[in-house]
Length: 278
Image (cartoon, rainbow, N blue to C red; front, side):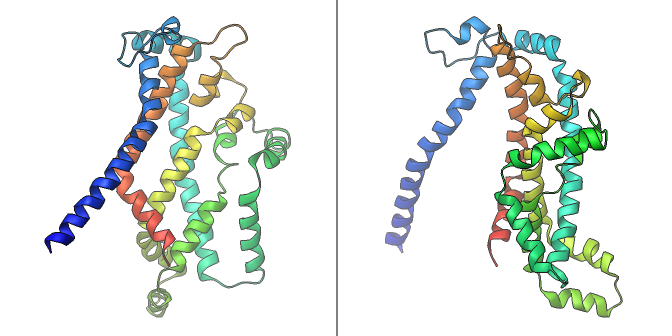
């Protein structure tokens, strides 16, 4: 028994000895981003390596706000990410439920098309999507243009389809025998059972919306409709680049994501594991 516990302890020590340096390598750029956000522009390019915070963070934030109205753009990003995540999780859940629990003509074709869209680079569809939204529908510089076009997520549909496929069909058949309607089965039985998968998908979709740069840049030309990543991009000019402001904005964009993941990592890991086992 003692030899087994010693072997386990040795494996644990070896694993931590391998993972801790890798974790530090991953965390070091984040730490340097924070350090740079506390320094003036000229200090960032100092030949000496500085690993401790300076005192210019608030000045960089003030300059960032003055140049871009960053807090307004941050508010837009928060609203867009939350609304997009809620709608996309619900829509992908409905699509995944239909593909997992119903049989219809052309089902295999639909699944094949969804799988095929995952392989397409975003640059292939963004130009037709822009023409359709901005020119045909006239929705440029609107909340609808920011939120609705990216709502369909192929990976999310397949993710939820996998989660619903793992649930016992007898449970839903018993509910139908009791007279429960289909929409009630979906909302009151299937969705609560799929909560870990939905939580993991929500984190993935929120991150995708939060970090989205190209689509908000194309569809919105008004300064008042800029998202935070686009607002940061405006600090890179032809003759001047506000590095301190960019670093301060990057810190404010990164910190909420790290907090969200730390708080919800249990649900994220549980959802990923649930979707991987069948």
